[in-house]
Length: 286
Image (cartoon, rainbow, N blue to C red; front, side, top):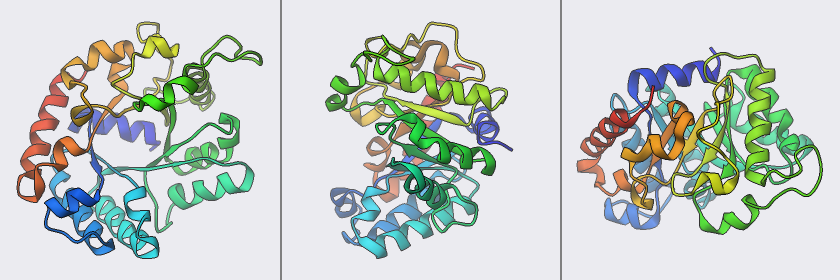
């Protein structure tokens, strides 16, 4: 099955909640865990255990493992293996981007079947040009994997760049965010999939998407472009507003929450995930 098909099945059966695996130093301390690779591994494996049967997706933030060097990557490999064994869809939040064979190497690290870091999808940065990611997109398609390309992100520092208008080229007059969105949807169209595409975009729930050139009430692309949506919960967006934020893109939205559930601690985590999954499921537009 393509990633888009597997994602559609997960959204239909388990709802749109994606649980972040973000072992911040302060969260490790609150959980009674050491600020070390061993602590990050224990944290991640506890999140996977709590998410299993309550949510369909998890999203490890690679940076919080990478800070421990080789030991951190070993810890992440074990967390990823647990998630695969649990049947969860895993989005590696690595935000990789490069050119040529370097970009291809990142794709092989995160998307190649059998890789120690194998995930179902990876986040990508397009700011060396969406075309620079073509090798990663091709590998994803061949391997039944997915990607999520940054387009309109929830951090305010990105607004100046992502809302900038292109002066020339085939997408002149479009914002940077809109151009990224259009190139990703065009890739899905060329792949001739149905339902959900396997290439998605990151559109933050806390940004006013029309200001980024993205008209959420226009006819949606076919196949529908998956949307990874950070900003719910801790960052302030209310999941009950999912339909009004994302309009006709809403059926393809993945509700990403991290600190809003992780702050419940190891003893309250399963209940927090279950509660947030229920809320996200109730807000989902089919």
